[in-house]
Amino acid sequence: MNIQIKKSIKPIKYTFAIQQMEERLEAISVGKKKELIWILEHHDVYTGGTSFKENEILDKSINLIKTNRGGKITFHGKGQLVFYFVIDLRKRKINIRYLISSIEKTIIDTLSYFKIKTFADRKNIGIWVRNKKKVKKVAAIGIKVKKWIAYHGFAINISNDLKKYDKINPCGLDSKKITNLYKIKKQNYKKIKNKLIESFLINIKN
Image (tube, rainbow, N blue to C red; front, side, top):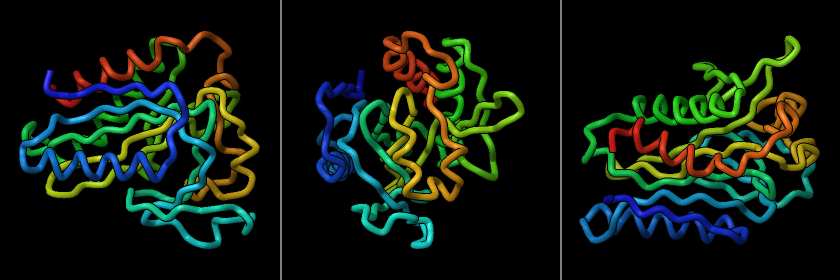
């Protein structure tokens, strides 16, 4: 396999992860290293993507890291699975729209395995669940493309503390519109990492 797969056990500092991916991107661009899939959790951190607005910060005391991924402001922390990748789009001859569709399908198919029905929304990027007539977001997507190599990725809320979202308008939304898998269906999600990897590799035509 030409993709290195890493699964970090201990939480990873956000800035360190971004630095590692950017270094990997440069190495991939000149053919020196393999592509990467990296699954991890972050230490608690708020990050603002390229389209976030200052008024989406409700608690001005939070530490916010501005980042170059697409999307708005969000929170990463314990109980959230972050699926990063550094993927060469040139090699697969796929475009950005196809990549986003592949990510959406990866999450939807994986959660279907756990008997959770979710869907994508073209107007509000991410993966959503409808429960008792309420629609809530369970996974966020944010990518960046440089030299036709895509990196960053997506995050799925599994058992994270949803109160952390009260300090921001996550993804430009009211915090009450964010949920996690344990709220939807309390069950064992131990297999979710491998299922996501399997599905992602199929969907990006690896």
